[in-house]
Length: 104
Image (cartoon, rainbow, N blue to C red; front, side):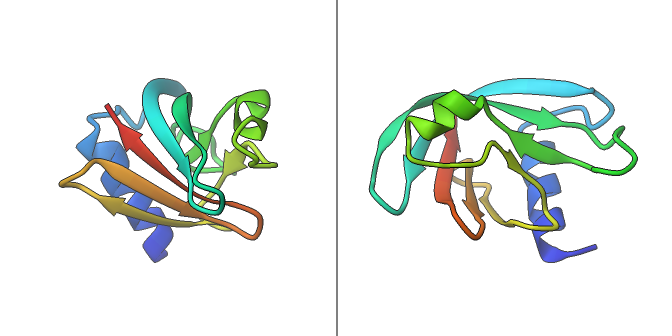
């Protein structure tokens, strides 16, 4: 298992998300680390029941565009995840995005 996948699953477990659930929506504060845009956002965790996709993070595309983030889905295969349990912060880095989610 890749490090990013381990970090995402650590986040899922710490937030007490049932991995068998199809979709779980949580509120978070998002910070775009490139331009420092900050605001509230709903984040969806898609469970591992998707055979081809595994667990991944998604948000409404229009909401993310409001924070100057082009894409709405982030998979461990093409994004780097780092989770800080103490602060409940998930950092997401991909080719076009670099943002932090702080869960409430």
